[in-house]
Length: 65
Length: 290
Image (cartoon, rainbow over all chains, first blue to last red; front, side, top):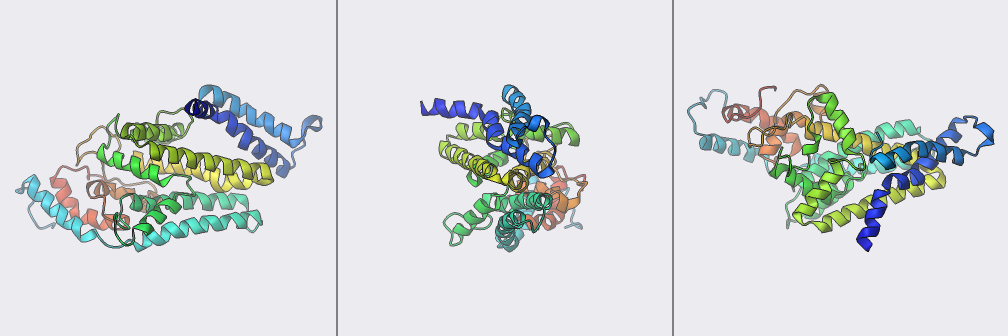
């Protein structure tokens, strides 16, 4: 049971990393560079979209590059 | 040594001369490794307040942290081979402290590094048993690309190869420790990121970890063993002339001496190499490039 849960978490690694790190990283880079965001989008949402653009393929392919 | 005709000696006699040279270099306390290991860790720690308080910019912190992460591997490598202090000796604790702290900037668990590195020495260039075999590649550019591929989540090399090695060795304790270490590392990065310090965390830890891994794989795994197609003692490692010089290659130009005599301290391998070279040539070692 414990092993199965850990294995599932491990397999979801890219998605967890995308949400846990890349999303706030992209948001803070956007904020600090003062890039105007379309539709009054909050930086965190823009960060999430950017992070997911990298994370979803990484989750499916098992590699970031 | 250079005046002596070695061609008449048997491999056993040559090995004895080689051991005598090695013995001269073994047992010296590696002060520089100890101070560099602890110093690199402390300097890396100091980067955090410097970057957080805008004393230095994040990009400068990234450059410094990457250099420290790469340099820090070398003292840890000395500790992996018990060069600082042997098990049971008075200064054993120092060996362990240096081993553990010097790879923190690289986010590399010392126990995992030690266990898998010993397997690398035992089975150098063996496709199944050498945990670093995954870094082999046809040329320098392919080696860099292979190193980048090895740090991907579902790669065959890198941490996944290390996990397979630990399972084969029955070292679940080390594997669990390494998993906990990495989970803690990721949680620390996530916490920093969600409290508004993602750029600092990326510059000081996440990016140096990845750049450091690629650099170390290139110079410590690929370059000294290329083309990694021989497993014999005198043929599995080579001396080579690095484009970035001996310092830029982390002293790996003389790595052949390290594989033959792993307890010679890192800083003494160049001297040992030049003293041993005629013997190594007579033994058929791959020392033609340097």
